[in-house]
Amino acid sequence: MAESLKRGQEYNPSLETSHAGSQPNKRMRTSGVTDGSDRNGISSPPSKSKSKAYHEDGNLVIVAGDVAFKVHRGLLTGRSNIFRDMFVVGSQLSCGETFDGCPVVRVSESEEYMAIFLKCLYGYMWPHPLHDEKPFRIALKCSHKYQVYTLRRQFLDKLSENYPTDLATFDEMNNVPQPLGLNKAFTRLLPVIFEVEALWLAPAGLYNLFLVEDKLEIDQLPGNILLKFYRVSALLSTEFPKFIQNAVVREYRYHACCNGKWSDMHSEIATDLLEPEIIACMSPLLLPLFLETLPITKKLCQRCFTELEESIKEYRNDMWSKLPKLFDIGESWEELLKLKESQDES
Image (cartoon, rainbow, N blue to C red; front, side, top):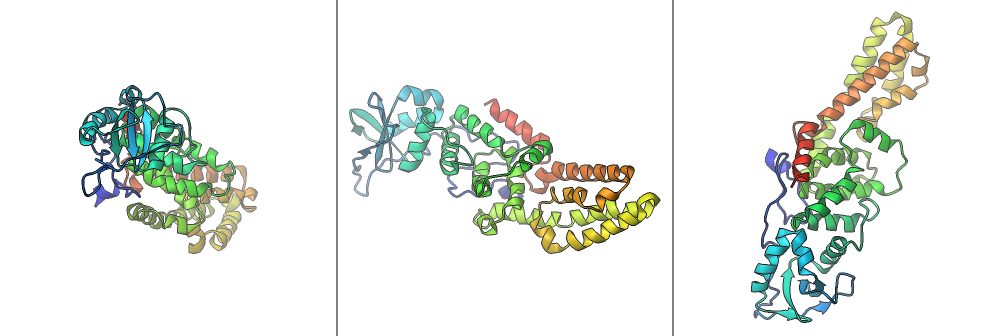
């Protein structure tokens, strides 16, 4: 079961994923080829695509659904071994079928998927992961499936700007107001992170679910991802109360200088921040920062306030460092970043 959890179910589970330490799928030679024939073995004639992905000077036609895209064999084979192998095997499967004077290769992708992918491959469009979430997701999935590694790497580099691997970057992101609806894009991109095996982005992606206000959006995720999130959510629900016990109760017992103020702080926190309903809807990493904003906190002497700040910092760093293991993605951030480096070298 642990192995299956590391894979993450995707909306279109045609691609295998793997756990941390693996490489992207290698040499899926014919997985995208279809012969395009009906039950009588007769291929239905395609129609010409009206998109930029139909090149009049092309020398090969890719048919997705019932739409033809005229492309340049050399460009596609130079970017992808999968395309190179598909063109060889696909030409045999199409039994000499031609369109507009060019040999035809039929693929299993829809017209929409192939149009977006080819336009990205040719450089006609560059979708933003959050503002153009659907085309970005499609292009990333296809670049992974067809092993167009340079394109895949560019998409993942852009995606990494919103899925940090260190706490400092996470804090910088949360200090900037996010546009309305942005969390929905974060949520919908999460399954594809697992599908394309970019597991170093997964801990932050899963953690971002704590920040999603529309819980119905979360419930649309695949079951394996939901299981990861709700299991960790339950585990972390006890961490903040433990921190309060260690960092606040301990201090008002041992610091005579601010004994009464620590006690008042604990009473205020118990009233406002320790209710289960509040903890359940708050971000575990952001919740401790509220302590620094409480009026009673600002009445502490400089030594006590500094000790509280250090306790909060230690608590948050420790929680961040444990996210990969808590979500059952990898043993550490270091392990996941080594996975990224190994994939970048491919």
